[in-house]
Image (cartoon, rainbow, N blue to C red):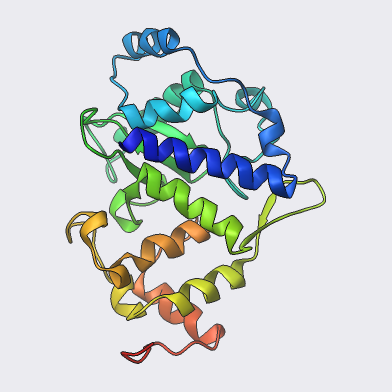
Length: 251
């Protein structure tokens, strides 16, 4: 069921991008052959969850993306690599992270979903998990400083960014972001905003949290996961947007 949900969101992302004339979908490769997936799993010593496989069975990245990185795919920042490049990139990130003294993730296996200085990575450490979590990989921060959501939720939030006109196309037909619109839209739709910003990743599964507690994840995704969602930053942004820190119970 999860792989089906992921594919539905991917198809919707492609349709939304085509409807608006985005260049990203014009450069997509065909989906990868399942036999090639099995070959790469053996080569890299990993097992890919079904929902992660669904992404590259849909399309195997963007043409020449691993060499030129000219077309931003997942919104204004993230590039969509072919599966082999995604495995290689994620392994390099983990090697670099685990070579340091802080922010280490020993024993983890990752797969890069969206490549950038701050990347979106699929945690494939538990290939039989019901839903693969998507983490934000920032070499200067602990994983816990960013919200975590499932793969289908991540793509759904990217689709919402298009629907809500938070992402728009520039003259080069690539995605750009209305940052203030993203902040204002998330704040208006959220409830108990500052309390939501204070959540920690150990407060239950993302899918079981109440709506207001899930606001930070949505908030960060609309900003393409490049900004840490912390109470301090929330308090800095809300006055600038002329949005009260607390909404009434009826809000």
